[in-house]
Length: 91
Image (tube, rainbow, N blue to C red):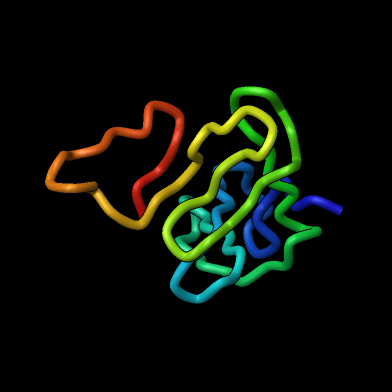
């Protein structure tokens, strides 16, 4: 069952992401400043482009297997060039 609200303050101003360094899903609440470890079923991440749940997490990035969109990355630069993820997040 996906989490839609913060379990502490019941606010909807949350962000769910995958932490590549810790290899876990996290929920960040911007209202009460909580940082909570959650499981994959609770996260229920979807691609912002094609709405697919087929998301792959490797050591450096998270991407959609269906459309190829990079959802998050751990580096700002690749081969000396600054990258911008239009729909993603630099961690």
